[in-house]
Image 1 (cartoon, rainbow, N blue to C red):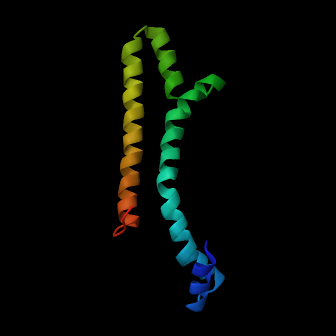
Image 2: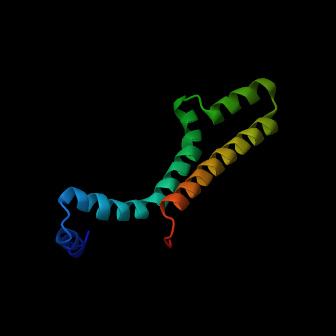
Image 3: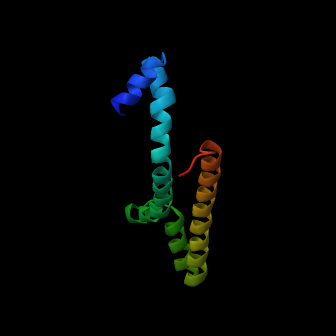
Amino acid sequence: MPATQYSAAKSLGMNSIQVYHYVILPQMFRRIYHPMTNQFVWSILMSSLGILVGMNELSGETQRLQSTSFRTLEFFMMAAVMYFVMTKLVLLASSLIAKKVFKGELS
């Protein structure tokens, strides 16, 4: 935070907690919101790597089911659709939250 912002907030009579609450945190949240959403989506999509350590997740369960029924295409297409839907739901929720929180701002 530039010293000018801190001194301007102090000149308005804010204490340190108010400066962080009303000046610093809103600016920080605006800067990290979209990258944070991207990281969340990335963590959903990369959860498929959990199969490497024996974690039972969507890709692992899909692989287990297709190995018993030999219907590879159907199971993996359904897994892809499920990943797509989960990602789109997160992005939709993120967009709705951003519209509500950042209304009236250009980004």
